[in-house]
Image 1 (tube, rainbow, N blue to C red):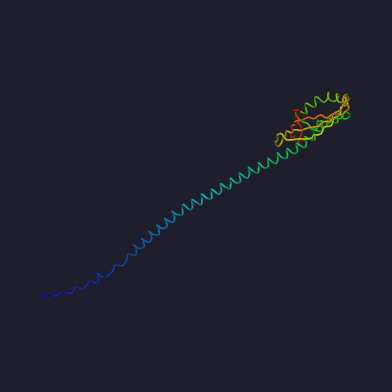
Image 2 (cartoon, helix red, strand yellow):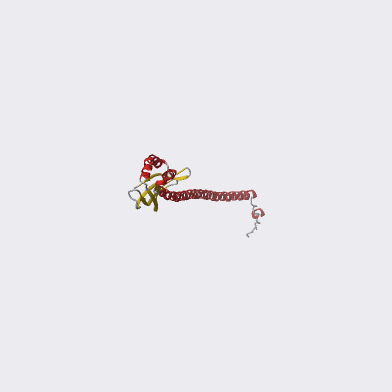
Length: 205
């Protein structure tokens, strides 16, 4: 006869061990730290890109200011040269008519007008020759009247302009009482001196 003995399960074996709270907290802390490291690693490139972008914007802004400054200066220079051209050309036209006009009865007045508009090399040359020229004009009762028919700018800067002038000059004297027309081309160098445009060189090219 076999006797079967029922073995009861040990309640201790069925009991589930509670989770270790300290271990769980450590795991969570490590996870949070890892997340923070990831966020920091991601934020560094973003911050670097922001700084790079700010630097690029600053460089572009400075370059734009520099370019606008240069363009502004060039425009100002161009306007100054244009104004110099206009003033020098107008003065040269008026002076060429004074220079090519003479009245033997008003020689001294004519000479003073010529010298007033001259400077430098041309003034020195005209002053030296005026004494002999004066007597020659008076003796021959010379008369002349010049008219500028055309003018053009050959070269120009803010304080020096070369002007080409085409002049018709009516001339008469004791030998040629009937006026004749002489056509001439004058190359006149105008310089800005003491607040005025004056002729420093006059040539017949």
